[in-house]
Structures are given as structure tokens and as C-alpha cells.
Amino acid sequence: MHSINFLVAKASSQGNIPCEVNIITMGCSKNLVDSEQLAAQLEANDFLVVHESEHPMPITIINTCGFIADAKEQSVNTILECAALRKAGKIKKLIVYGCLSARYMQDLQLSIPEADVFFGTDALQEILSYLGAKCYPDILMQRKTATPSHYAYLKISEGCSHNCAFCAIPKIRGRQVSKPISVIKREAEWLVQKGVRELLLVAQDLSFYGQDTEKKYLLPQLVEELAQIKGVEWIRMHYTYPNSFQLELLELMIRYPNVCHYIDMPIQHINNEMLQAMHRNITGEEIKRLIGTIRQRVPDVALRTSLIVGFPGETKAMYKELEDFVSQAYFDRLGVFVYSREENTPSYAMKDNVPKAEKLRRKESIMAVQYDVSLQKNKALEGKMLKVVIDDKQGGCYEGRTQYDSPEVDNRVLIPASGHTLQRGAFYNAVITSADAFDLMAKVEE
Image (cartoon, rainbow, N blue to C red; front, top):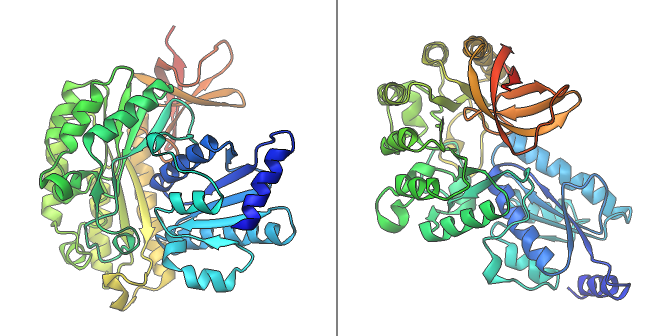
């Protein structure tokens, strides 16, 4: 504590040069929101904060992910890389926090002594105190965003009250705690004042929002209130569990043009035995009926889902049922996770009986099916005019997205830069000229 206060004091005494902080965020968009809130607090304390700096900075803070094996490995590798820089003197202070740190703190402390301190989740005040900084409660909803200025993630709850057999999040983050609608709305209004035009709602499960506080589902009410904020062009919903999906949301998509026709709904599997073993509290038949209802009411909806292959007990026949379903359900976007055996989860005691090579084969096979589906769906868009937001410019093309695409994970719309000057964050009407499985090529309508 004394040493870091000395560092800050020394930096301040040298011509008021701010102490530099690099925040590295691993894992999901919910972690990113936490990092952005921490960055805002540090800036209020006159630190110079950068997200994901390419160069070492005096203070490095790593917000880790501890969800599944691959994510844990990436977090550990990042800590080790920064620990080497700390040992070489290129980093003066190395702070590690977040899900991985909460889950394996003692192991990390013993194996990576180069890190100065480890904290768990919800560690904002602990980190500020460690750095000799003050917490400003009045700006807790404010953030130094790491995303482009025209879109931002809006976290509406913490933790998760489900008991999915494969997931450690409830053990790491605790049961779900929903933020009040008034607080979320103020945060959204602040973001819009800063230039944000697209709000991406995130939580471990959006559908459950409000059940912990009001004993009723409040997501439709929240979305309707956000849709009426002047300046919000798009509202996008991520992680709506199927077992409590509220059909009222579909009516809001029809009623409000700024509620994107986009649903991110992880189903994980379609076989009833697998769904029961995973503790998903829904049957394959109910999932199919829900998808049918959604598409009937909002025909142009983009459905994103995630699946798990290789869960304990998944036979070849169960897997084949899932693969056949993928070819029939015609999802717009799809991701596949290979089952990862995680400590302190209900499935940890189950025999992990599907070989890793077979898990990977099953993943690749489903993604091959989805490739063909994606190609067909994108080809069907050729010649159509769509509203596109411009995210970036790379080389000779502007990169944008439609309402059916979320940043980082979905399709891009590529528009030749020659003859055009398009503004990042601006919306344009564009005609799709050609398409492949992952990208749409377009021209802006004059």
C-alpha cells in the first residue's frame, strides 16, 4: 500500500504527470463493463487510463475470466506475460482480479508471485483503495468505454440464479441481483449523452431480470422504457434463456423500430436427456415450439444460439439429433462450445466420457452445417436494402453491421471506401451486392 501511494505521489510531483494504468479485460462483455467502470473511477482520481495498451505501462490491471478451460488458459497466459514484464521492471505494479482470480486465488498467489495483488470479483473499491484512490459513488454508473463511441454494453444484473450443470458462474458471481430500472435508465441516458446510439443489453440471463427483486419478469418493461430514450437507434438483447423467454418482447420489436429484431438465446442442446442432465429446465419440444412462435410473430428475426457438445453421457445418437436439428432450425448465428469439466459444478462428478478428439469432431461437424446455413441466408440478402451502422474503416473498406448483427461475433457489412466518406457511428441505407458465409458486401444508396 505504501509503495503504490509513493508511486502516485512521485508521479504527481513531477509536473503533475498522471500515473498511467493499462486495463486488460479477458472474457465476456459483462467483464468489460466492470473494467470500464473501474477506468472511469481511476480517471476521476487523475490517473491516465488506457484499455488494452500495446505497450507496458507502470500499472497493469488484468480483469480475468474463469468460465471454461480455454478462457482460463487465456487469462493465465496473459497474467504470465505481464508477470514477466513485471519481473523485468517494465511494469511497476501488476494487479489481477475478476472471475479466475476469485476462483483460484490461492493457487495463483503461489504460482505467480510476480503479481503484486489478487482480488476477486466486485473488486472496484478494493482496487481503488490499494491504489490510494477515492471511490466516487456519484459516478458509479459512468464509464470510460472500451468500445467504439457509438455503441456500449449495458449490464442489467449481476450473477445468476440458475443451476446449469456445466456452469460455475453462480459459484463465482453469486445469485442474480437485478439493477433497478431507474438506475439502468440513468446509465443509458448518460451513455446516449456521450454519443452512444446502440445499447447492447447483457446479463447472465436477461430473461430472469426482475425475478429476484420484484418476483416478476421485468425485461419487457425495461426494454420499453429504454426504447423511448431519444437518441437510441438500436437496442440489442444478449443471453435470453429459453425457459423463461417473455413473448411480450416480440411485440416490442414490432412496436418500436429501435428494438432490434435480434435474439441471443442459448439452447445448449435439443435432446431431452441432455437438457435434463444439463439442468436446463426445458424440453426439446418446448424449444422448437418457442422458436416457431418467435419466427411466426417476427419473421425477419435473427436468432443467435450457443450449443455444447461432448457433455457427459452424450451418445452419438444424441449428438446426431442435435446436428439434424441445427440443419432444420436454420439459426442465423451459432456458436459451439466443447464441454469443459469444471470444479464446483453439478457435472463435475459425472464421468467425462466423450474423448476430446470426438468433442472437437462434433463441434467442427456442426459448424460445417452452420456454414452452409449462413451462406444460404446471406445469399438471400443480395439485392436487398438494409440499414447499416459504420463501425470502422480497414484498408479500402468501411466495416458496418445491420440490426441483425452484434459487434465482434456476427456478420460484417463491407462497403468500398472509394467515392464515399462515411462517418463512424452513422447509419446509412445500403444495398447488399454480394455475400459469403460471414460477410456482406454492399454499396451505400445515394
